[in-house]
Length: 139
Image (cartoon, rainbow, N blue to C red; front, side):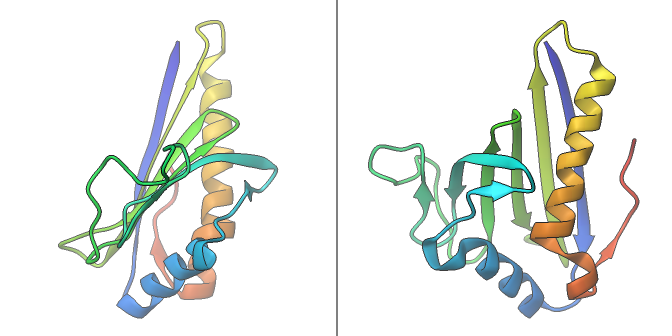
């Protein structure tokens, strides 16, 4: 198949901004159901007590941490996205990947992944609202 990744980060000058962004995404345990026009099919939150919507008991198999933020989303369009804070730098990082069948044009996969990441930036991370420094996205 076709596998494409798009990983980057935003500079955050105030830890309170990061806390506010992740609090909005967690929405007091009422996690988002959609990102733009794409349904969110799975969520794993490794912060604090943890949550995994795909686990029968809701508990993640991976270790949790109260000192860092980490959310992973699975989307109906095939994108897996992880948002996390850096442990050593003033950065909010994102890692995304998308898999598609072998017959799919890799340019189409890249375009869909980039469209999804633009929605992540615009709707979830909101760099303009929080005055976060960002770099141009590749491709």
